[in-house]
Structures are given as C-alpha cells and as structure tokens.
Image 1 (cartoon, rainbow, N blue to C red):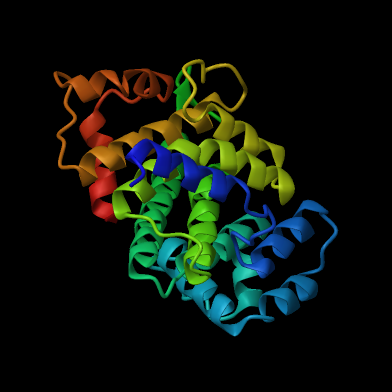
Image 2 (cartoon, one colour):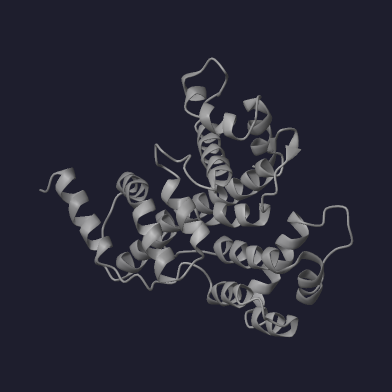
Length: 280
C-alpha cells in the first residue's frame, strides 16, 4: 500500500500533466472578454454572442437583476443590460453566470464546485464593495470596482481548472482520490495552476499580477495594492466565518488581516464581517 505522501505525489503529477486548454469558463464569456478588450465592438455583436447560449443569457439576466438593479426597473433583455450596465459589468455577468453553472455528476466534485462558487462570488462582491470606500487624504480613490469584482471571481481559477481536470480523470477511471486529499491539493496548486491557465487564455495582465501577489508576503509592491488587499481580506474573513472563527482586535486571526485593514483604511473588522454574513 502506498503511503499518503506517495499517493499525493502521484495525484499531483497526474494533474500537472493535464492539458491546459481545459475550458474553465464558458466559451461565450471568454469571447465576450476578448470582444470588449478590442474597444471596437458593436452592441449588436455582443447581443448575438450572448444569445448563442440561452441558459447562459438567462443566468446573466438573473444576476444582473440580483446584483445591479435593486429597487430599480428590472433588466429584461441582454440589450437592456448592455446599455444600462456597460461593457465591463456585462463581462462580469458572463463570467459570474458561467462559474455559477459549473456542475459534475460526481457528488464530491460537485460539492467542491458549489463551495468554490460561493467563495469566489462572496470574495468578488466584498472586494468590490471594499475598494469603493478606500480614502487617501480624505478623498475617495479612483479604483475600478468592476475590475476588482472580476479579480475576485478569477482568484481561484486554478482550483476551478484542477476540479475540471479531476472530474475528467475520474470519469475516465484514471483517478481515485479521497475528499481530504482533494482539498489539500487544491490549496497547494491554486496559484501556480491559476497563473498557467490565465496565461494560456490571455486573461488581462492585471488579473494575473493580482493572483501572483495573493499569497505573497511582499504583496504591497504594485499599483494593484488596493485590489490585492481587498481580495486577501475578503478571502481570509470569509474562510474564518465559514470555520466559525470570531475575528476581533484581540484575536490571533486579527493580526493576520491587520496589514490589509490598514491598506484599505478599515478600522473596524466587524464592519466587513457583517457585510460578508449578509451576503451568505
């Protein structure tokens, strides 16, 4: 019988050998991102593209109404959504809907898909909310909250890729793995595999650089410091909440988020945890 270290090594090697072209998001979302990056798209082209998948467009409208138009006239068409929300928010909706619909016939993998979705969506919303409140010298900073939201969705793209790889391997009867090992490997390989996937799919550089700094000790070293701080804080606090840990100024966990709180000029950690709990 192989020991756990040997089994883990074999699983990691098998995962690292998988093709990087496994689609991590819906093709429509990826094409929409590329279209918007060209800055020369026509609304009619974007509408036609989104309508290629009825299920995805329906999910996009659902999230548009849940996220952006509380108390306002509902958004009922993709054209209406594009005109009212703008290109970046439409891209965000496409990726949100794409990730939310990830499913597997394998119960264990499906459970992780759901957990990953809840975490990434929570981090995306919380991070975007945090950065619009950042002040410097009493003035609000000009930070693109829509970019921060998408960075929140992307920050565990490595785990999404790994889960899809695991799912394919399990279906092919090439992989047999227990739940604890899945969790451990996802944590270890997320950043490395996420960067590889982002590079392959030509995800804009701002998201790749943010991912590189997410777990780095020297994360305060670029123009993306506020984005990185928001993601790091949102990730940690959501994890603590899920574990039932109370983060106060006297707790050990508070010291692990103190730098992020200072960077974002947040003087009350409960203010953020209450926001996250309201989302969940």
